[in-house]
Image: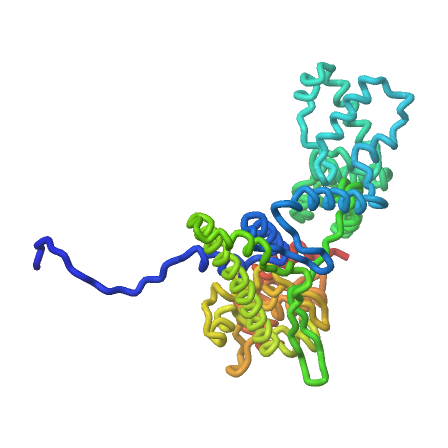
Length: 442
């Protein structure tokens, strides 16, 4: 072994993550909103870049920033007209008879309401609030009791048990069995250990089943009714349309701002030929502008290739609906397009496609492959979930199918080979309880 020190030349190939390559990768995985924000920030950094969107005039980032902020504020104000929402506190206080409350009582109630979470549950500590407001603990407890009399029933509860009990006492005050079970047997009742409850209360399993059905009709999140959710809108990145010649793919470019070169600025400073600092600055910004254009075009081409390949492999889905989704992985698409799997993952991140059967996230097209008894056919995890859901819907509720029985039926009726653990996992993902908790007593 030669351990002598010395100098040698060696030639190697090495992939370096340049700033431009990093930028191209980032742009590929950006959603439309993220890409728009990125371009707007770039326009503020690079005076050679102007952006325009639709009928909006090109923006000069050095002069128009204040004007844009003013326009945005004005637009936000206009959008709020006719969309004024009433706060949770206002909705609850409006139900009180303020004439019967002292100023101190109202102060405590307001403070308690501010300790309700989005589902209407009280999350504070009564003792701490009493100390903080310098009032007796009894006054705080009475204030919470007042809130719990308001609508929707269950508001102000400290836990799920109290929430359901308040609602049951409000809607079915004469149902002594239901109130007794919720008060004293809540945990075993929720875990469906009903034989123990039936024995101790000397009632039938059918009577407990009726209580269970009534509890199922209650609202575990009463506060959610008082807080309106804002509507979420999805702008598709790609369109898949049905034409006479078959399925066609089109990019949706309108939401993405157009990048325009600021020729006037460039000419103005290019004339300063002898200023080397200005010359280097313009060269850097020109290169930055060109890389952005190239990265946007690469993003568009990659997304187009990926979606076109998805359409090619999933024609039944786009023509008949999601039940006809066939198994497909990102690795499979990447292999056929001769690109890396991570490139496919970035391309479909936060992207949506509008199809003849609805709008879907691109990631939803990729599912794991499930083996079947046929050597020529496989199925997807989404198809298996749909079959499991149908089998459970059609089962005898007095003798629900166990996970092992579902495994056998999938193999016998559908020719699908899965393990019991896989069935349990899919059932949990669909929020379907186990067979013991699905059992009904008639």
